[in-house]
Amino acid sequence: MQTILGANGQIAEELAKELKRKYTSDIRLVSRHPRKVNDTDTLLAANLLDGAKA
Image 1 (cartoon, rainbow, N blue to C red):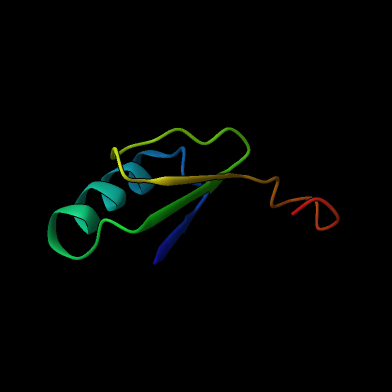
Image 2 (cartoon, rainbow, N blue to C red):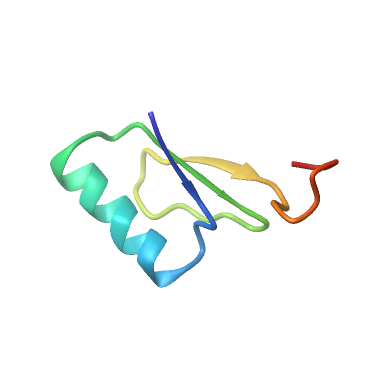
């Protein structure tokens, strides 16, 4: 499984597409309000600036 932190940014979106295309479909996207890039993505909502909630 590959995990992308801060997954709402442009770089993370392109990384998720490229990982699925060339390496794996097992991708976890982590951000405050995550949304799928690929149909097989796993989403995890977390505020990485708040250690008590992450």
